[in-house]
Image 1: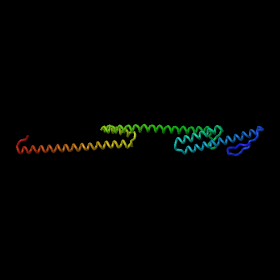
Image 2: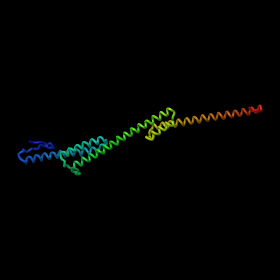
Image 3: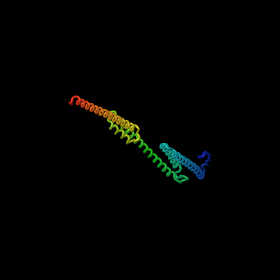
Length: 212
């Protein structure tokens, strides 16, 4: 009878006629198990290397989890296996991978919290912008500017808020210029009226000797 080893080679199994034949069979099977354990360990090491090349956190966690399963299988097949290079035991390697996975999960959680915070901040900015526009439509320009400035405190580069503030300030400046021009015209007309009145008074005095 025969069986195939991990290299797909046929191995002759001795007949179970003596203790020695059983011992030989156990040795053969033991070597096979050790070879399988090493194959799984090398597979795990390869997955560790792949995980270090990935940028996406989810993909790195997936590869490390696969590596962890390979190391678990190695431990089941050969609990005493050690890395031939750094002499780490399988359990030590498993703890190393667990640490990496936990670290990546924490980074993932931080990124999710940051996304949540950014979403809330964006909602608040949009609320300030909407309120500012409403105040503008109501003619409450100082209040509108206050709302747009609140938005800028959360995002100093927000073009919408900056454009609204510039628009309101330009319109206020135009109104002030228009008022100043109108006031100047009113004063000029008043001066001309006063000058005309004086001239009429002088003319009346010269012709009649009297002043009304």
